[in-house]
Image 1 (spheres, rainbow, N blue to C red):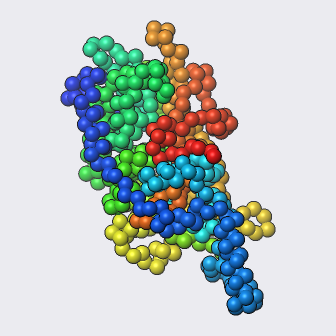
Image 2: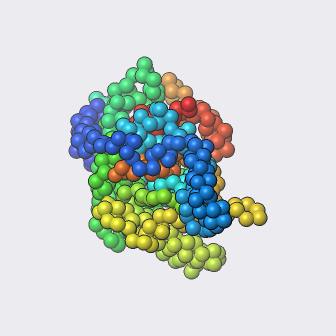
Image 3: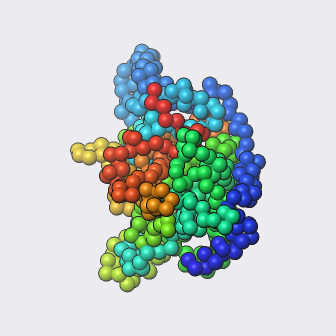
Length: 524
């Protein structure tokens, strides 16, 4: 940490060290604007499968029933009966169960951005989202959110002996609050950091720059104003942090021996940083400002999960089988992300294997090493599909089959059992893929200050239910699960746990930067 602090001081000096100087931060904001493309969305009525998503199940089922009756008259009831009882996919068996009919406001977002995310259509888990699409024979979009959620971030018990570890987000927070921010020789009274600080400095997401500039110039009259966070200049500190972290990851990327010894959390951050890089896929939907905010949502939600699962060793900052299939499939177009996730899983497998030679729970660790190896293989398959789709190459038969086996569910004489490759990404049990995983973590404590008139507070990050995303790529409509992401402050004496957050969730407001772009929160 001392080395990072030294590098931060050097970079702060290079940008002038003046908190009020926003020139460098403005250049990042301008860069985001320059790269943003105008989305070319085809007329929605021409988009394949959109009518299926936007038609109520009872209407779809009435059409299918009419087709069944017509087929019985033409081919006989016995023939139709054999079709209905075959394990093969057939249009006459395409009965809908789940309603994805869009509101007018949701259709407007889809028409504007080429994608939209609906909070109204949220579900308890990523597996449930995939199962609903599978059950209704709908096209599936495999999101980075779902794979990041599945990959376990809880380290083996043996790591607890290492004590509290260096955490980048805590380092960032410590450098953007009192008493680290200076303006004209005076310490700036910024006492509460923000997730956007991490989005810009840690992940290199330039889309956050303009949002941060607006917050710095905001006043108490603004509806989203947060006392002791907004209306305060600290641009120089942010840019110095960004340069420090960019430099660290750039150097590490060029040092193969260093990569082999990086911590799991560092590899995780490296993977998330790839979502700030332009997608190699040419579709304009992946290059808009709204899309970059969706990627920022993914980054911050995944970081929340990482902080939650490593809270014991993270040093906090202080101020001071059914017969269905998917109609089509598409993989999140970030091959570099999948490469990093593959490397992360391989590193975990190697690390756990080495621990197994020393730890008493050797058999369990061996099983976990094998699990991470399988995880790496699946992520490698996702990378191969993403590369083929980027190059607009036809998928190999086994790749097409892979996309149709994301999720299955069979009901036997008891509880449901999840099948497909997605549930295999969960270590303890496949059924874990279908469980709700609402969580919250406190990431910063603002101690009360009589001098500043600050009652203090605790900054929390949370992940709630799984939102429903609709994506139009090259005229084809796909659906997939998307993280929900929250940030809020509680009084200094109220630190929430997961259960308390779950009860509070209905009243927690989504970030305005999300609802102003891709996230629809209308209920009717």
